[in-house]
Amino acid sequence: MDRRTFLSSSAAAAFGTLVPLISRSSLASSKAEPFAWDTSDLIFSFDVTAGKLRQKRIVPTGMAARADNSSGVEIALQCSGENSLDQGMKSGVGQPGSRLLFAGSKEEATQRGKRLVCMHTDPILELSVESVYEAFDGIPVVRRYSRVKNNGDSPVGIEFMSSAMLHGLASPQAYERELRIHLAVNSWMAEGQWHTLRPSEMGFVDGNGRKHRAGP
View (cartoon, rainbow, N blue to C red):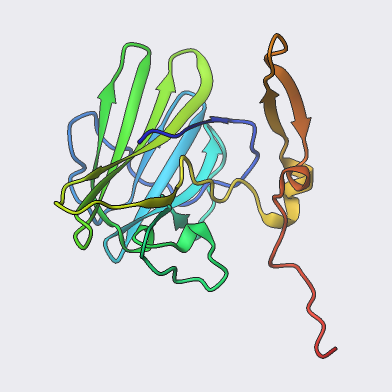
């Protein structure tokens, strides 16, 4: 299963703790070690907590470092018959996505650039899940998609699977000021109609800053 999305490097954000870049060899030397992957325009940094891969800040190459422990889930997956940990059924905390174990990462050379593959496993449903990042030489774009393989004998239904997870592009209070989203709207004989939108126009809002009123 492949679901693709494209990310541009227009975000202005602070860079998390600098960590060693992964080598061009095969698997990362230690599954428990933080690592980062860079393209000519972006730096993706990751951490591993309790055996699970966490995505840290995605920032443009060359930004100043800032100590930051903020991170989010690297992939979201909800399968049929699995309960979500969140009563509001937020896709980011579905199962088995929240229990996926990190199985390592590898970098591959491609004809047009390079590819990072992050591997996950779910021993309960016997699933292998891959998060794929592809960078292209001379183009400030990263393609991100996910793949899942059922290694068991029983069928598994997929209710939701993320093509990409974005974390820490900017502080929530600075979304409107620092970020712009460029979206191509396609229609018959009218392809590539580019629109520039504020985060709030795409549904990105600061949920932590809401004021709650007590009582009726």
